[in-house]
Image 1 (spheres, rainbow, N blue to C red):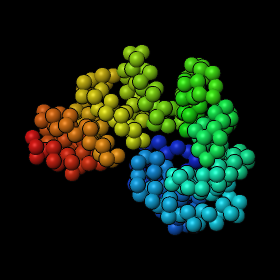
Image 2 (cartoon, rainbow, N blue to C red; image 1 turned 60 degrees about the vertical axis):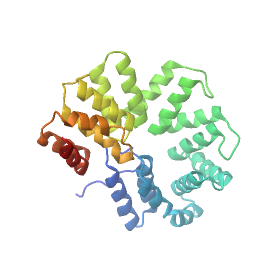
Image 3 (tube, one colour; image 1 turned 120 degrees about the vertical axis):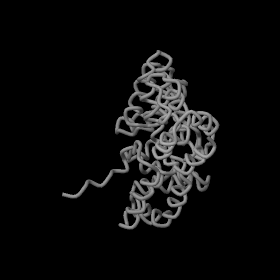
Image 4 (cartoon, helix red, strand yellow; image 1 turned 90 degrees about the vertical axis):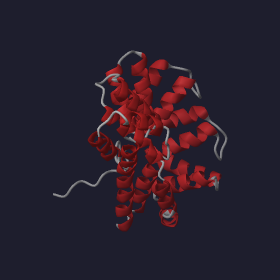
Length: 282
């Protein structure tokens, strides 16, 4: 028996961007343009311009599939149109078709455009209905969007219980934004160890603020033992998103570390070259 093919509908928590791109390439080579597009979109959400560009490169093939009635292709085409702010009414129409057949991604994205009035009149109440339906179908981002709206009272009455319910659902599905908020909530309650675990889950899916918080926890021993290797690891990791906010702290911390520790931090973060620079600055 061969290994099961990863399902793009399941949020790829902690999967490196390069692997997401490779999954997309493999699907595209096999002629599965819907799977390829979704893997590229996952990479794009993690800040990958390559993911964005490769998804755009599939638009012609996805347009053909959408014209043939493929609902998942309709959602992807709509996403590509909205990204560029083009043909927004058509994008809404494509999402309406997918949502009408209970495609979770279609319901979530239609909820997004209705919440913000993108290419159509705003309808936050219907947006929340769509988010709920998509969340109940297992879509983590829909669950997170619904939780935010319950917190803010957008299109629905403020309800902390519902906010907590859907935030927890999104976090359990690995949505990094939800994991980070759950980390903040645990930290406010003094549950530092639990907070760190949520921050790490968010950090592993490229959430930069969570990376920096996790680094501080390891540096200062909050919710865990002091661990300079893990601290520098998470200070370097934001470089994946073009963010250098952790570099100054990494330089300062590296001054009290061994060469072997700095190299290990570089290996764990995927930034061995930058770790080499830290060694040379000691």
